[in-house]
Image 1 (cartoon, one colour):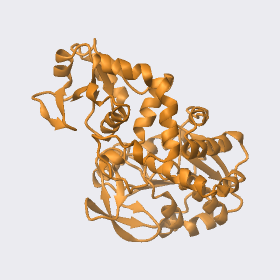
Image 2 (cartoon, rainbow, N blue to C red):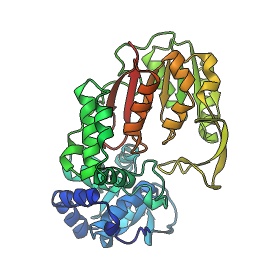
Image 3 (cartoon, helix red, strand yellow):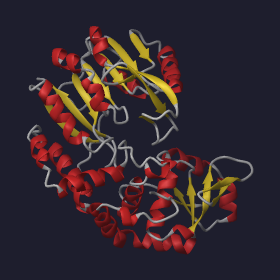
Length: 409
């Protein structure tokens, strides 16, 4: 169904067509600049491919000279039928080109460019939320992140599916659940985030996404509860990665806690996680090489270090054990954080007894799957009617890092 070198617009849901039509007048000058000067896309991952396809949709693919990365040496094989250069070779060969950074790691790339004398003079184009045209082009590119990986059917961080899902709900006049979930929130920021995300994906309303309130002050997951975290917290970190979220937790509690149980399914990340715990000489920490879900089972896990990392029901990738949090209820968690690539609802169902009995504080990501925005708050309220909810947007891209906070007074 999807070919990265061909336009995909004829398959767009109406809301995505509307969004594309609304942003064209805004990004038109940037597109003309790309056509005039030529573009080298910095990156060889899914974000770079997604940015390339965004240019395809605006008939700007012929302006892409090639791709580059910060490697050195000879040219790599072609990527998407375009030449791949080292960054320095590309800068020497095309000094007047625009180097568009198609990577979520654009900050370290910019730092590398500033330090490299042979690259200081290149013109870079990267995600900048303060630039309206730039913001919308990169947001539009994010729609294709799953599709360029050949994962059309996946709902995980597939923003094409978000448009499709809410557009279809609106067609069926079935957005009544929006009213139900809105009634669970008291503060206006939370309600605005829900209404605007639904409006954006259901209608392609450009003002809706631009008007989502941001929460960048404070540590994501830990500083958006009504009360400060205590020194006796028992922290369950689901999706612990290499220890970055634990490091933030330690800062939030000034190093004082009762215990930590960290779940990380990827073997390489789990190894780095245990190394982090050892280097920091952390006490009372248990690092478990498993994902969290509704039951004990073995699933396949694919990892490419980027947007493609996910659980899958296919036979590709490595096998990973899945465990329900209720198995670890003896630890008595007081705080549970989940950033687990679309497995949040299943993991919460696997923690049903723990949540009902202990009523822990929760910090749960709601942006991986479109249905999570509605289904997860409703499910948690059915378990613990006393929960009070707030929703916060922690990423300037507006698509990622939407976190639900739940607590009992």
